[in-house]
Image (tube, rainbow, N blue to C red; front, side):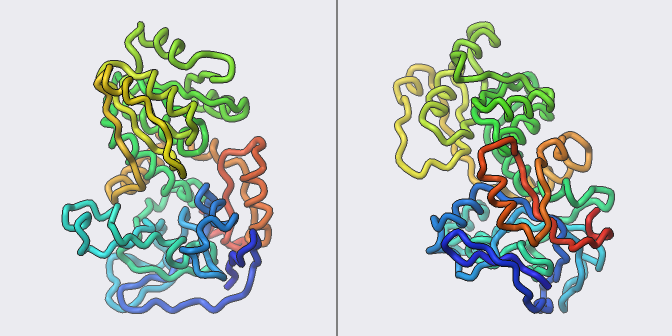
Length: 346
């Protein structure tokens, strides 16, 4: 089978490798599609070399089918459609013992700390699998993992039907958060400076603000009759975005920090005090978030196909990365690992 290997120094190479037979409690998967995310780009640029073992098979957004079962696996059958929840926790740390296994203090993130999905044949523990409905296309199902992030974010924000929600940042996660919030019955507006990404939000039926030409706080106050948003999601990872999200909230509004800020970033704590705001962190997801994500995809509540800007074959893995980080007209890029296998394409 073929695998796309990260070799360090921003280099990828497709190589032939032996498939691993599944051991006890393991399942071998035929990988169909793998999505590229911001974390994968950080790996490419060497920012996570201390965590990956070079040469590394990375990737954690995927869909595929069961190809072989190891001893003791009875919940799945060959041909089942699945995705992988790429979190492997120890079950013994204080976070795990408190019921927060998804933020285990010794968490192994599969695709970073352990071999990931960018290979045609992938052997993983059965406990990491999440079942997909047979009728769900594998191309759309490759967005299950980022959608699970969005589901977790919206749940952390306690979004309720009828609430006004501001999403700051219209990248893949921001647009998924907006759709999940809308599916919960909220009214949503997305603040995004990119013309292309605002147009993508418009095609999803979402209201948008261009923060380069309009004051986000004033726009939200006009939208909400002067009150402010009930919930704001900061997904831009920028200081101006964080300030806009904080200042757009109503009294006792909820600010959910989704983006990863690599450096300490000022927060207007006077605004938090003055309006009694809640500041909520949101990291990865729990299994129930993954299952809810699959449910939303299967039910047609998420327009996943409109977020997929390009699909490249495995031979063009390096070009797929270049397409995503070009900064052009792109939202989500997938790599096709099925090798033309129509049964696996879905």
